[in-house]
Length: 332
Image (cartoon, rainbow, N blue to C red; front, side, top):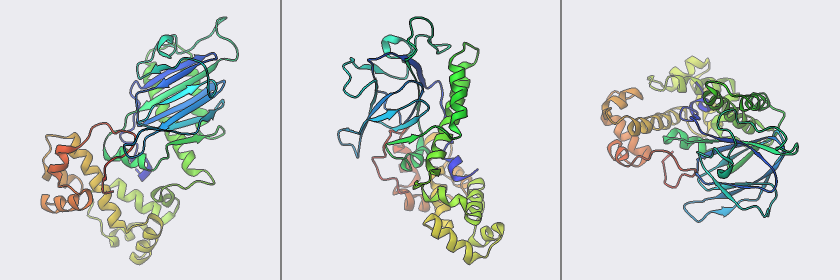
């Protein structure tokens, strides 16, 4: 496992496809669920995404409209609502869409299974939109959101194209297990889209992502994420990566922005925070051992230093599904 892959632990589509909507102008779909991440891709035709953006609890502000052409993908960060329209300023009456949009009256598709509209009633210039929403849970999901802008665009021509082709083929058929297949394809497409966005030539990816390209630091990061509870020291990590202690410490700090054991502690506390929120029956001592601490006291001290609360206090106040924007300091 690596730092990027680890962030997708809690990112899973689960019946979350809003629908494959075949639209004829004019139209205005207003997505109101406030999902932390929403993936929008146009299989045919074109339209405009008009996002709203929330900052620090303030009233939503309008984000500049984003044109969505065939093959393009936009990922919109919630929780503010957004619209998909045929033209900016369209006269169409907005139709409120949510997770359960499944009929034309709700802005969804005509058929829940075999999401495909064809025949003489559907014009050849109709626009086909696929939308998938992603609930994110816990501190791992928060860490992914913090690395993303409010809206990001992925142009066609990359690895997501093959997944989009499979998605287009799957929404056009009625078959047992279709929702499972669509969910997994959406997961695959989300990963490909985010990876392409981080890897773009003019990109500014998070330090932990860019550092994976370095043969030494990338190896060290993979080790820390594969074995977060191991009794790591800088010396043992340097030995496993095949360089001196001084070389590893300098390269890691230069590329990641903090020393390796500081990074490890923050990641352990991220894992622990999700365990505290999700595993009510687990004791503090049990969670401490799972993230590499032999006693609860040392773990509690580290947790409070990073999170600002001791583990028991955090457990009492831990949120469930994340909103799209972190409104409270997390200490990481």
